[in-house]
Image 1 (cartoon, one colour):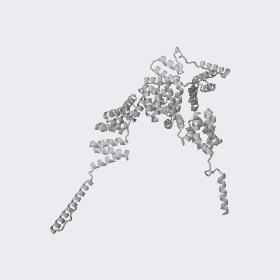
Image 2 (cartoon, rainbow, N blue to C red):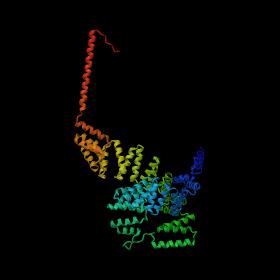
Image 3 (tube, one colour):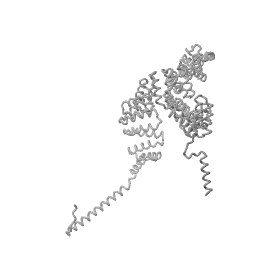
Image 4 (cartoon, rainbow, N blue to C red):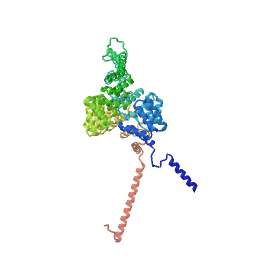
Length: 627
C-alpha cells in the first residue's frame, strides 16, 4: 500500500512539472499559432499590427512569431529573409498549412516551380486559398499539364473574379488544347474583369486572325491600343493586320511603335517617342542631378518617370520612393509607384501608394479605379463601391465600371441600385450582351416579364451563342405557352451547336408536343446518334413509338433506354404497358372467373334466404322487423 501511495505521488509530480496543464492554463505558443492562422481575415492595418504584436509577445521564439516576421519582411520586399522565416516556421510547426502556402507563393515568384508546387500542395491540403490555386495553375500550365492547370485556374477564379490574369490563363490553356470557342469565352471574361488587359485583346484578335476575320481582329486591336497604348505586341499585331490589308504606311508605323525596324526609310518617328539612346542619356543626366542635389524632389520624380519609360522598374521604384520620402505633391509619383508594386504582386504596398495618390489629388481617376479593383478582388465590396463611385464622378462614360458596380449591388441583393447601374451601362453601351442578360434576370426576379423578355432578346441578338439567355427566354415562352417562339429558339440552338445532343432532344420534345411526330422522331434519332446512351432521348422516342402504334420499335427502344439508365421509372412503366399489349394478362380472365364465382355464391345465398323466408312464412313463424 505504501508503494502504491509513493507511485501516485510521483505520477502527480510528473504531471504537474510537465506541460500538462490540467485545464488551469493554456499554451501561449499554441494560442499564438491559432491567431496567426486567422491573420489573412484581418483587413484593417491597425488591427493587423496589433495582432502581430500580440503573437510575438506571447511566444517570441515560436513558429507563429517566425511566421509574422516572414509577413513583415514580405511587405518591405525582403523576399530572401521572408523565405528563411517561413522555413523556420515550418521547422517548428510542419503542419502549419498557411506558412507552406505562403512559402510556395514566394518560391513560385522566384521561378522555383518544383519547390513551389510541393509547398502549395501542402497549403491547399488544408486551406482553399485562391492565390495558392492561381500559382499552382501557372506551374501546371508551364508544364503543359493542362487538365490540372484548368482545375486550379477555375478554383482561383471562383473568388478572384476581378483578376483578369486567371481568365487569360484559362484561355491560353484552351487555345493550346485547340478549343478556340472556349478560349474566346475566357478572354471575354478577362476583359470584363479588366478592360485594359492587353493579353485578352491580343488573344481574341489572334483567334480572329486564325479564322481569317481581319476586320474583327482590327477592331479588337484598336480597343487594345486604346486601353494599353504602349503595348508593343498590340502594335506589332496591328502592323501584321495592316500589312495583310495592304496598308503599308500604317503597317510600318505600328511596326515602329512595336520596336521593330522597318524597310520603309521615310517613316517619321511619332511625336513624343524618344529613342533608346536619348532615354539612357536622360537617365544619366538625372542621376547626376540627384547626386548633386540629393534633396531635389523634382529630380527624383523625373528620374522615376524616365526609368519607368525605359522599362527599368526596380530603379523607377527606388526613385519614386525617394520622391515620396520627400513628400512629393505629384500624384503621378504615387500612382506609378502603386502600378509597379502591383506588377510585382506587392498588393499591400500598392494600396498604400494609391491612397497617397488620392490624398494628393482626389481627382486621380486611375488611382480610385485601381484601389476599387484591389478592394473588389479581396472581397471588400463596400470599399470597392466607394472607389468606383469616385471614379465614375470623374469619368461617367465608363460602362465597364458601371457593370462592376451593378454586379456588386446584385450580389448584395440591392436590386434598386443594381438596376440603376445596369441602366447606366446600357446608356453608354446599349449592345452590351452581359448587361442585357443580367438586367433581364433582375427584372424577371421582380416579376416584370415584359422587360425581362426585351432584354433577354437583346442579349441573344448581340451574342447568338448566349446559351444562358436562350434558356431563360425558353422558360418565359413555356410559361406564356408561346410554342412557336420556343420552336424557333430551339431550331436556332441546333443550327448553332449541331453536335449537341441536348439541343436535338429539346427540339424533339417541342415537335412531339405539337404532334409533328415525323419531325420529332427524326430529331430524337439525331440526339441518339450523337449520344447512343442518351436515356432521356431513347425514352422519349420509345414513348412516341407507342403513341403512334409502333409497339415492336417502342419495346426495342425502351429496352435500350432502360439499359442506359436502369433508374428511370417512366421507362419501366412504359415497358410494362407494352408487355400487357403483347401478352394480355391471364390475370384479367382469372379475375373475371372469380367475380362470376362470387356472383353465383351471392345468388345462392339469396336463394337460400328466400327459401327460408318462404318456409317461415308458410309455417307462420315471425320474422324480425328491422328498425
